[in-house]
Length: 299
Image (cartoon, rainbow, N blue to C red; front, side):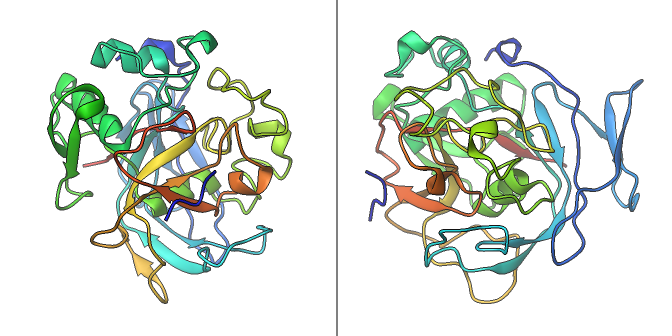
């Protein structure tokens, strides 16, 4: 099954951006920022309302894009079947992977193996369950609805996702489709933001066998850092084959043995950091390969 060997101030804050993808190959929308209100509008279509930017997050617009082994990808695996996906919900994505400092501030402990890397390095050694518990803590602190039902504490916590992931207004994992749309940000580059691995990703060839502080390399066009490399990122979906044909708001199989993780990490080769690459791991499994970032549906 396994294919692998709240302190927002800790994250650099930048203006949000958005995308509008309406062609067979996604294109970045012509967005502009209202500097007075801190909102972002899509000036290509003007179909979406102005959305208030959340500090530490960027906005990704509802879109149709091509997911999987597109022309810009290489070294694809059989589970990366190319297909069209339509996302009908706008959503926000954290600019960086959740850091050790953020996790410890919210949860009261730091599970990371690479503690010496520092508070601005991504938290790792977190299971899907531990990461979901953090998402709930963030939601509760913001007065939003928790997206997970959890029992237990610390490394012994177990969580289940809400029935309709898009309906929950709290913080949560991205679906695989949301993750890939955000990582691509309207481009068909091999990695998130570049065709050159060293510009955007810490992987086995340049990491020195350790994680690195978030946002240390270039972001993609949406202002998202480390979507390729540093640590693998948990997603909402159970791992499984993509549905045949096009899909609208996919959430993966109804059940499974492993949750999908995306983006590659400090330990692996460059092909694992491609925007279409996928693997999975048991949701109760925690090791120093895995971290996460949060998203949230826009009402």
